[in-house]
Length: 261
Length: 229
Ligand SMILES: Nc1ncnc2c1ncn2[C@@H]1O[C@H](COP(=O)(O)OP(=O)(O)O)[C@@H](O)[C@H]1O
Ligand SMILES: [Mg+2]
View (cartoon, rainbow over the protein chains, first blue to last red):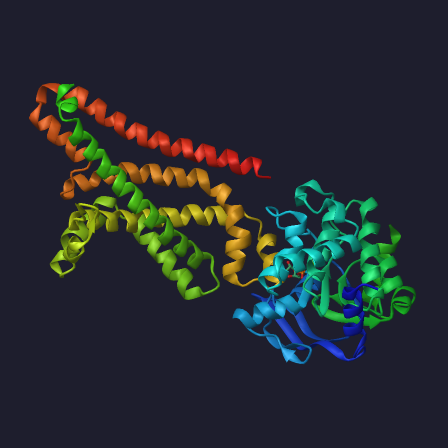
């Protein structure tokens, strides 16, 4: 086991099951649109939560409030017991603790793959270039992109770019990883390579919030499914129960639609 | 022709001042414009609004009016820039006229620089800045390390236009006691009314050389940044 992996599993396994991210009575409005309605959600250390629901139900917004890319109107969000800071250096530090993977990858277009992964460790964690590159190469190795380290994002396929984006987030050694539809922009043949990396991450004990409609991933890796509809959490259950035996009519209706195809 | 070539040192000195005004005002406009653009897209609403107001004010005011304000109105309330005249660059004394012209040109041009940079920033997809914030970079780092380097390429062509306009705008300083190229031209034509056309052409040629130099640099930069990735 590498030093990095030992460090990671050691840290993450310790305290497994304690609350890590707690949303308490969270409300958010866009103008008159009540986009998040009284969200209460506790994510424990090491837990993998899949968020599912119709388009426009507020899944992305929920995800983005957890690293404060979106502000909230009411309620509170804590990470590891600390309320999210409102602004400035403290907010930047919080974001360094929360990894985020976007639907559209968002790799820095003017930087090489290696530079994409080392930017945060060097500029935020103040690591030396050498240390940052060593860490980056081990992560790129893990996601299978090490041999492309000197290329630019545009030279990689979507699936490869998304795996780099995961490595970039992991390089900050985050406490929790947020994934907002990480495979929705990918061609079908590339979805698996990204999901494999995510399943591996889940098995190593990473705390994850994953917005996805990939039922296979939810069944293999998730501890819990949260179903959102119209800005509210309509149902929460284990993946098995949720997919075979949804309780609410909204969920039955939604699953009926996605299962038909 | 000999009106110009007989006094070629005067001709060169005139364009020397034109270039001096353009370069000094250009550098200062770039700095001020960059600050204004950062304020405009930044997270502090008060600064964003102040920068917006600045741009509205100076972009919509004719340059001549800005000059009149700096060169005539400000001295009335005691701001003359006279104290600056003690500063010497080599054996050349900085004149208060020069400083006033630089201030007027900088205030005016920085509004256009700000807008050129802002359009470049807007050309960078928002996801780039979001990803940068998500790994914990602060606002300054997001701009400096991720957004501005990508905006730079989109900014070069409009920025070249701004600097070309600035070069030609320096001619307004002729009316405010500066012997730059346009003032030199008037002096030549006053003394040699029979050679007007040649003098006009030779002065125009001087401006064309400077403007082409800016345009050429801009193409070179664009090409270099294109092959960079
Ligand atoms: N910046 C915004 N301004 C206004 N409305 C927004 C904004 N972002 C999202 N919305 C609206 O909020 C609702 C929830 O959006 P989102 O969280 O993206 O849903 P999902 O990810 O579940 O598809 C949608 O109705 C969307 O149109
Ligand atoms: Mg979404």
